Image 1 (tube, rainbow, N blue to C red):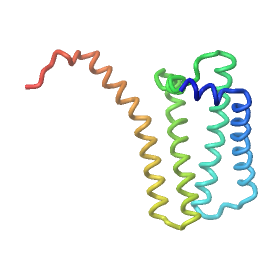
Image 2: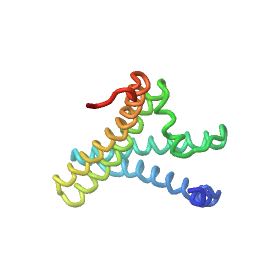
Image 3: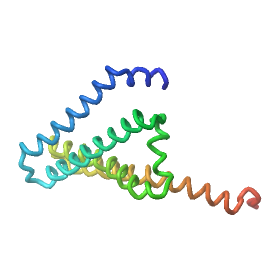
Image 4: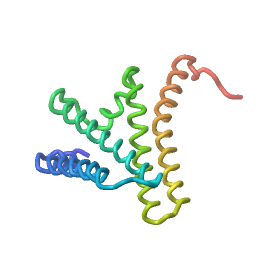
Length: 160
């Protein structure tokens, strides 16, 4: 991972990645104004794309400001840290949930608009939304189980 980090944190590569992400955001927002979304699938695609644009802008701002102002290690632990502190959980749980759900909704509507396969599009959306729930609930379940084990000292119980 440290070798990979050296590659993507190189100033040239990092600048290129940021330009590509900003290009994606700008082109997506431009497409919203060029098209008139009539069908429900098109509207879902527009709204999920708007949320993804918001998510990417907020994520880039958080990571870059943390890395260049506060200087913590911006790895996976940095992303998950907010989910462990109360005031931040009320913001970050819906923030990450909607990001994963928006990706799956965006992909499912693209699939539907290209192939007209309603069943497959619904399957993609359901799998993505279920994955969002699993990602968010997994952390809550792990935290609750640790709390229960520490509180009730389950190590002393034996099953007969």
